[in-house]
Image (tube, rainbow, N blue to C red; front, side, top):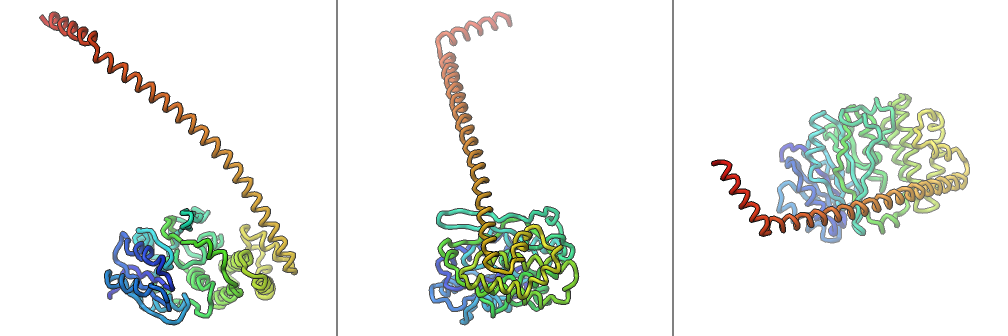
Length: 395
């Protein structure tokens, strides 16, 4: 196959229950010059058969098999087989907007971008609900090409560490020698995204919601211990970009990346052991670096940074719990205020609907009365007399 505009890489593992909607959404694109590389890595369900079916039906689909488990291994195998000018990643349990390729690649070509970042929503099947993710609050970052070096805010305001919301220039990925770290079971996206994003000189932010991230409530409640993979991921990013250490733009980005990573992973720990490992890892590897660049800490992470000054993990945990309770209370207050506002709106709508119904009834009564007048003998006689009068006037 010759070069195409985009290659969509989809790692697949036991995804038969949701694979068809995923593939259908990708193949329904409004721009057609793309290929789909599906990499099955050891599925034991009907996923391989579904991939074979789609590959036989649509020449844009290729199905590969990598027996060894691991999403990083699958993605790396897929990248090696691509022919697209841009790389896009889709997870097999998600779906995409039909304009994804057209909008993302169109913006990439317009600005000769190395990365195009688009937004997404989170969707739940039971009950069916969609929750859009917030846009970057810095409006000036949209509608133009930007360099990470020139940003005066953390890139975490613009992008989450998920490769499926970014279109990557393939030649740029090859130039950096980027691969997903196969030794990490989680946080592999963090490494790939930030190794590409931090040195990038041509980045485009696209406000379009082009990706639908499927959340399974039951699975999200039973996540396993990450074994502090975030610490290893940060170590890899820092090591790869260490020549930039000491430059203000890099330290601004990396200090806040460290805080963002630890804040999220400590807040979502699966076990006490994971929490303690993260806390000690921060104190051991990153506390001195962050303290040295405290003036670069964004307000978004200021409270977490302050909490992490404590040397006792229990003190930090108590403060984290207090912060969470305070946040929950603010949400309750906000929710109550908006419920009252919503109730008032519903009441006003009810009044207006009653007024509208009354006006419609009045209009209908007037229309009936008018029809009665037009159909009456008096109206017919009056029209006839009026006609005679007009005839005499013409004479």
